[in-house]
Length: 232
Image (cartoon, rainbow, N blue to C red; front, side):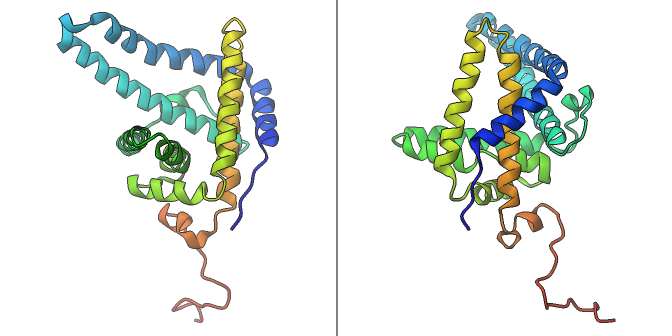
């Protein structure tokens, strides 16, 4: 099945959501950067003379990074569904922390290995499995199911996803260049654009590929097929 999405439509959606909720995004971005930035900066300043303490703060950083990543995806998914997320959603990670952590860790290792193998495999795997984290948070998928679902979702649109990713990166660079404050507009815009594309592609992913079933979503039997007991 040939899938498609419109880059301009996704960015327009992200821009509209950002404008209507600008100060909410400013708040969650500031908190996100503080929560993850403090332990990371401590690790960088400690150096080799305090290796033990540096390891401790590295663990704190990884924990904070995972929690914030889950929270940001949760918030963008809520906006995409037309709901109004709360600030506390940034820290709601219960039941998904370890699956998200190991799924995204495996994704990162896979991409790094791909870049070592002459770069092209790394780009391909980065695009193919870029929605691993979304599948864990949105569809409550297991680690392996999240990879399988992401592969189905991104099937046949990898070139366009590459162009979308490059454009989103350039937009955020532009926001950073604009006295840094521009990032408060560009980051939410691209985050919402990414979740818009994810949902758009998910809608075009046939259930027979197993995406709905593996996520715990009941799949209706094909027309004409009556399950045992339905005739009663």
